[in-house]
Image (tube, rainbow, N blue to C red; front, side, top):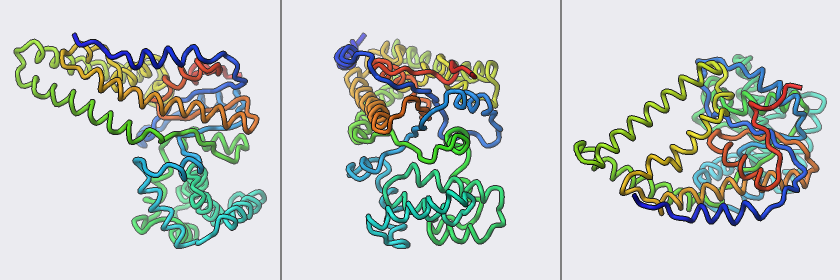
Length: 365
């Protein structure tokens, strides 16, 4: 059996013991789905109650800060970011100093009239022009939810089309679709409103996106190309291994989905995603499954690189959370992130001396 390269083990040994547990910060970790099935109404009451009991100072989401967005020249979503920026800039050509004044103006109006949806559109545009996508999205979420409840409000929809939406958004249904059934709609934004948290804090990192993408592509292309070739010869030792492996993956995924529904119910997907079995499986199947390493041709070096850059991104996300919490005096923060990040971020936070509570383990009082 091909031996696994030691790059990851060395990386962990260098990092894990380099930090004393000195961070004055508590994190409530919530792994979530980026897209919940709209056909299954989710019961978030337990999640919301635990966030409420945690009494966070801030909520962090999977967004880039304006500083990072401006400094990173290219990553998977940069083309879309710049296309949106150019569209909004042509509609509202504000200078940097005017941007800050516009944000302050809108926030002042919303203090006394939070239901002014046109002002929320203006504030969203200003945030996006400032490369603050997390807060631009937050403001447009208010508009989307308003239109969901008031689909005949032509005045608000027309204003949003004029100032923000691109030409493809030609109906209220299309406009609303962009702001519902994700982790922000179900978890982060409603709790921000309830708790009076007016700003979404960014923690994501895309510094390693190019290296990560290249490593992922090389590792997967090599592995699955080999697997497909051996699959044609099911009588060979490797062909039998691959058949059994794919069968195991399919059965394990079906079992976990069934168990998640049995334990938590279809309407408690978030709790299921944060169960130890599910978080371990998400990590293993994408990055580090023992079963794959049993294959003679397993590209250990390529998967080591793939994991290295994934680790770097999550390490950055933890550092960003700590640094921005310190800068703002936060002691308790909620992190809402794609479920695949939750396990590795939890481990890394704990290595750095941060107290982390899994949402399933959080007390209600």
